Length: 415
Image (tube, rainbow, N blue to C red):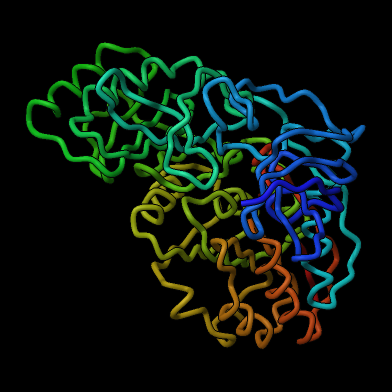
């Protein structure tokens, strides 16, 4: 460990400032380009000691838990609260531009669709019982230390205002000092609480049910995928279609970002009559597409697919929706199968859809909408399609993980 005074040259892909030194790059959280800083350096990792010259792009973080001098520790939920909007928005857009450029792709990238404070409807907390209290919050960056939070400017007021309730329920359920996760989803009918990583005995289970029933605004409590109590079925809306997600199901983190993505996808698909929605989840795109097109939804997770199917079957005015359970990583839809569709939408996990894109490239489907949470794998997947003669018609970065280094993208291609 040494102390060095360095100048930050740029932001890295994770939002850390990077200083070039004789020994190589040093990564320093909470720093910005152009700043001269004193760092405690351990190999390539720098810990901020003090600011010697401050960037004009530095702003006051809105949350007390952020940064190296946070009141209750350094919360790992955000990495860029100290950056101005202009710098932050440019950083996010450049994540997409640079990933595409690394694959030789240089399409126009639209301005970032920005996220606003208080929009996050889905949050994943870590909790742990101590001798004095139950800690509920986020892990400190690169640590298992839990920073207990009393506020969270990125998360919806409907969740933040119920932190005490969530803590009360968690206190009843936690019997050991082992950490566990709580996924909280704000739905139209109340909060959906999905606990993972603990076990309950009969007494704790009864106490958990009583704790939920004694509070208003909790739609469901589940543990490791099993519903413990469900006072009211949690529901979310996909373009006028009501869906009840299974416990802990993946949903887009903010509704504005979801609606922006859906608008881009639907505008590109246009008047297509037969659409395949791959990695369909609980129907974010499939159920909206079914307003105007016959949709075949393919998903590998059984409970998500059943939720989608149930919603489609119980909503009037939709075109036919068929569903197929299929692991698209191991068994992608083949080119011959895809020829039956006018358009395809795919929204894979962070690993992307490499195998599926090779089949899409061979299929000749006219229109494809690619939705991605990882610019690097998106660039790889798009390069497969471009090599096969597809043309990228738009690329739009979308922010829904405010003040983080994560960015969503919708890219449209056609042939």
